[in-house]
Amino acid sequence: MSAAAPNVVLSVSGIGKTYAQPVLSGIDLSLVRGEVLALTGENGAGKSTLSKIIGGLESATVGEMQYQGQPYRPGSRAAAEALGVRMVMQELNLLPTLSVAENLFLDNLPSRAGWISRKRLREAALQAMAQVGLEAIDPDTLVGELGIGHQQMVEIARNLIGDCHVLILDEPTAMLTSREVEILFEQIARLQARGVAIVYISHRLEELARVAQRIAVLRDGQLVCVDQMSHYNGEQLVSLMVGRELGEHIDLGPRSIGGPALVVKHLSRSDKVKDVSFEVRKGEILGISGLIGAGRTELLRLIFGADAADSGHVEVGDPLRKAAIRSPTDAVAHGIALITEDRKGEGLLLPQSISGNIALGNMSAISAAGLVNGSAERELAQRQIAAMRIRSSSPDQLVSQLSGGNQQKVVIGRWLERDCSVLLFDEPTRGIDVGAKFDIYALLGELTRQGKALVVVSSDLRELMLICDRIGVLSAGRLIETFERDNWTQDQLLAAAFAGYQKRDALVSDTAPRNLA
Image (cartoon, rainbow, N blue to C red):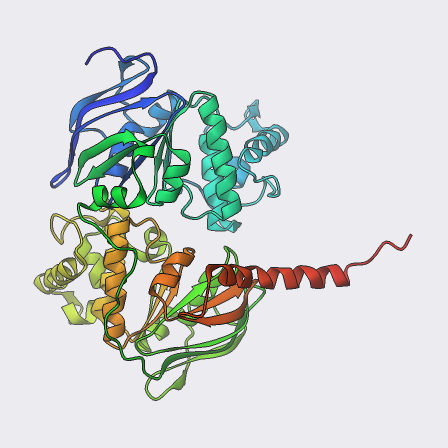
């Protein structure tokens, strides 16, 4: 490999990676100091694999890399970080039982004579947290007590500590509020000014257009485009990513919306969910919108029995009847499924195979007398692999080796095989590329044509407006308003999302003691 150009901090040449089958081949790419390179492509295209090779988490099967003019082949993530190559992954690398400060400096805790200096640790943590807008959080807070968005910001802050020359951000805004996104973009601009080369992986094309100067598009493990970002619009990029054109509208097909399949009455839990009531009908998609922390996930967990409600109940069935749901097992017995937002932590057994994961919710169909029928398990998995278009080498492939989008399809496939009448989807397309999103939208349409009742929580308003028949808006734990299709606007939905907080803040202001001096 020839010497790197003065402006190039890292370059890869002929990089390929093979697991059970090739996932990357012939990748030639360079990272320039002070530049943001957008890296995009469908799930399974090889984005995360390439990033992990650069970040030291994986080794290339073939090819070479150079970093600052020298051969580069890190044997571990720690080795890459020691050289100034950092990666913020979609899967958070935090310890929930330790504090924010301890997570930030876990590998370099300030100490003297074997004792940790809590004062110095706290001061250093406050400085690191200020960079990403976390000044309001106590550094001694356990990470497990933070929301997923704040945990993501802690992960970003951890990777900005010390010397950083290359920073890889893998879907960094997927769990952030709009305010946190703005703070992240400000930090990216500062890093660029310092000469840091940034690889920004995202499916949110409007973000790429805003932050990136160049774009690299992967498709089926090959680099199909490296060019100036300004040369492409969203439609052109989607065509490059998926190899076909996708429209901005979706036809869910002819459907017949029937009577109520799920009725929620006065459901409450502490200050997270407050007196929420709604119904969803057979063949209908009901969207649940709201800001992060509004109670959307908490509401689905109450319906599914994952958390205990303080008051209220659920009615399901035909005819409707009150359901005693004290656990997820009870919910499943009543025909309710939950596709969780945390597919890695709550939805999958990553070290297990695709067939093993799909079988989890369907053991009665593939076992007898306590023994699993291996061929029946594989047939079940193969059926869902074909139906969900899961990219894999075989049903025996480990789920941990799949892309995020294909992992999500495994979770959904498990519940489709179960044939539940009510399906609760929590952020079903988070971290999934545009092409796979439309596959899942089409799947949702098929489920409604079968008479299933769907509840979909999403942070993407445009997604809800695209696929839903009605949208209910949660704000500060309360269901503020429910909008019918063709009778909503994005501004109305956003206004409803803020309404509960404005009312709560007004009440706090009215009851607060006043200074009469």
